[in-house]
Image 1 (tube, one colour):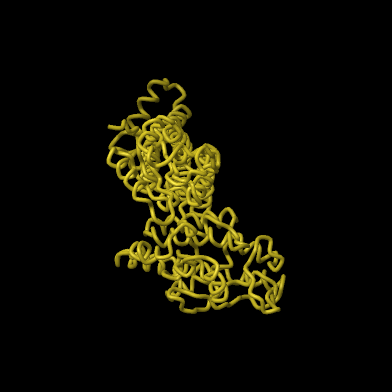
Image 2 (cartoon, one colour):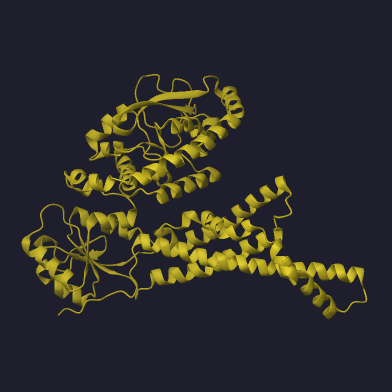
Length: 495
């Protein structure tokens, strides 16, 4: 019997995200109670100082005794702690929302940036609230102590996580079955990830011309008839089947034998999704939409209900922001480039149904005067200075909250495209029209993960993000996208 290597810890990306959430939640709860204690000690100090000023002859020990008795009597100090203070861990999770993507969480650079930004944003939000309310139930010492402790404790916890994630003794050792186009794509993606999510050992392929060769720095170690020996020699824990089309009977049996011995077997599209959070449209068979995607696209009625409720609440908030901000934005657009203020265009929605979008105009008038449909590109000369600001902050999208309320679009979904572009892209890109299976969105998985597209290649990548969202969408994912979009608006990094 083959001796199969098994990593000490095996967590899928979704499990890793839950682990990160749980760890951050526990550390932030510890930070809350640490902050309450710091606040308590600060209150003791202030009370003692006041006693000394009133009674200079009092001894330090006596002053401390009286201060403790005063603050502890009938739970007086704990009564001063407002109820919302115990909700700070949830706010901390929201501030850290962009760090729960597994590749981000495994990177020291990105983790440090997230932990540095979170308390700054929290402090700015608290300062704004304190300035406008002057509410005495907003304890500056308590909030400041929480932000400091939460940052330190989260940093310690994330250091432990990164150490576990990157430890070679705990990582999966992966062997790729198939050194063709699909295998090359995975190896290319893997080589760009730092730190790597697993250790890629190499390839197995039955093509005699590939034996002894290396692709993307990974060697072809042999043929499938030696699969079990290669697994044992290289301590392989996982096989990724990266073969397009039919698998030979001998290869299929070798994979089954390995699985029977305890090796984890993963199909290439699943591993591709794990590494990129996209669907590999160029490596799927023509009947994939019918065999796999359509079944997985179905969602529960409860999800549809909560999604619509989220759209209504978000739509009402958005319309309120639209009404309040309209005069200022309208004046800015008119002063720079005249009228009209709004821009309307026909787009395709769910099922290919046409609807009209309403946006603040961000380009010069007659930007497509020649009648040619042009996709927006980065540093597009047609965009005005005011329009550039509106796009980077996503303010140009605010009028679309009206369409969210009417149900033509959702808060979250694929970007609505013009019928001319859909007709063009579906001829060049497989499964492009599958994005019309759901309502388009004001924001979406592709929008927060990818920027402008200026080529068919980039459009394919954006489609892969859209199909991943359609396949995996949940209320939690929608909420995460909305929060990350808010972060984009605050950082002015929109497109």
